[in-house]
Image (cartoon, rainbow, N blue to C red; front, side, top):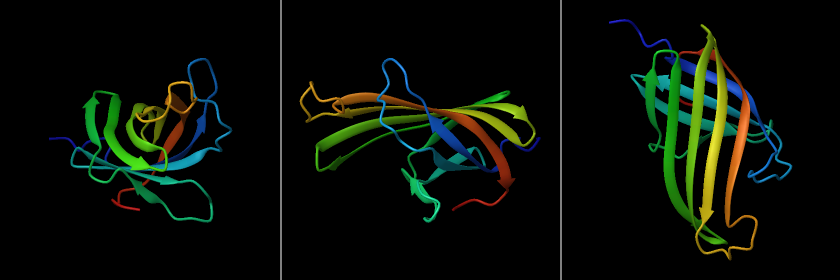
Length: 140
């Protein structure tokens, strides 16, 4: 059996997009690291150059590969100062070359206890960019 061509560690900066239907804060780009091994994915984020990568939603991501495309996704919930939230986060990836992936990050957040007239009650976000293969190791 051939090795999964997506195996390895992929990193890149994703730029958050503005547009109709999207939550439009002035979020700076985040650096994302995806590690893929044995048809399993882990996702890490670095929000600031001075900090280390932090794993996002440990153990929650699922992955599907079909030919040149990959879908990595997680649906989670939690609580914070605004109450209960539910979030779906997806990475849609396509091969642009042996060590380059085109990437779209799409997410939906439902803050179930916020009033409907608040902008952050229910919102979508979208980031785009490329991820480059940086190695084969798993983890941060």
